[in-house]
Length: 486
Ligand code: NAD
Image 1 (spheres, helix red, strand yellow):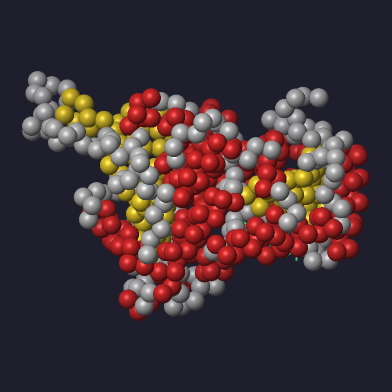
Image 2 (cartoon, rainbow, N blue to C red):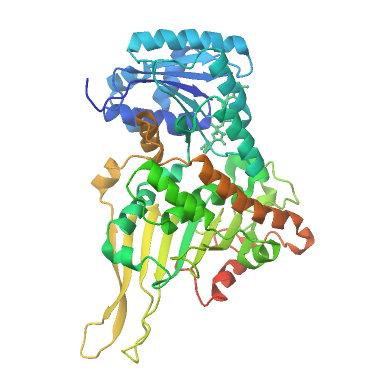
């Protein structure tokens, strides 16, 4: 057997859903194409609909249609999929599921290895986990790992309750909480840039860094997710997970080794160092926004399933303070929103200006290290150099690295990478419970301050579609003498 091949039975709860069809099946197919999945794997898709295996195979082939024109390969891949009509609250259905799982284990030689992917609403996680245990679906001879999706709670208390439910069945090492940003190539590259280059390593502190900026902007609005978004908002949807994970990777101390345990320890320390704001500090350091309409694009409040007086924020900007030796005094500006000018995920590390300007008439700019996560993965550095010519003038130039087309084609998609990590038992790119608990506590303080605020003073909508958010977001930096680099 090829030593990169993984042996496992996937049981996907929510097998007819959007996530499964758009992300999971294509990712599994890519793993199959690359040889990580070959002969020794099977997938049981479960959901309420009464589908047959034949229909399920058609759905699978449809979801991977863009990835292959090799019909034989697509057919062989789809033949590993089995559909089980299942209501997660019906105990009898788990008995049928166990029998099918055991049969497939034997048929494909899966050694009892099982990966349970909960691609459905978190309100079902508790009952699913409990039934997996009581109905004997959890095997004794192989591994049993559970993969869960965001949102993981809507505040600290609910996240803890959810974690307790899952934790009563699965030990922490077997719980894989997806934050798909941690599966992105350039997010993973943060540690390589920081800890692989003495130049940056030496300068990665408050002596040299002026400020750090993180932007996760989306061009789309809420689309079909308005029902969920109304109860979530940008703060819970993007800041608690993706943005705070990026903040920790940028501000954590060097881990002793590149291992899940050592990295998580430092990430937790970085999160513990985040200043938790009181209500006045939230007002001073956070901006919320909601998009209004422009020609051809609806305002948030006019979207389907959104209340006409909704106070849900579709934009957040904030200034975070990391109170550790290296980052005390370095503002970490974050920004995320919907219906912004363009879709981008980008990190700008802005270095301090030279303490003395030798070239009196020159206009030196700050050095900036930019990590482009999406849509064009790459890294660039903005530097001052001499302008060509007789006079001694300076100009700012960009040195850039972007992925070649070949590299981009080779680059695994975030879900593909994370599923392989889960199959290999690698927890590094998943959010551990301690990380989540600190990030929720930080977030709850902001949410509480906003919820207690007199809503009549919050003038929504306050930014137009296709802009970079409300004016107050720019002012947040301007009052520190800074500006958004992007
Ligand atoms: P979806 O509504 O498209 O799918 C939900 C699935 O759950 C369906 O297969 C449905 O049949 C099944 N289901 C619902 N109630 C059931 C029951 N009682 N018994 C058995 N099956 C039942 O949702 P989705 O978009 O696929 O999202 C799934 C989860 O992943 C959600 O928690 C969501 O927040 C999260 N998520 C989704 C995306 C995405 O891109 N879709 C991204 C990030 C996180």
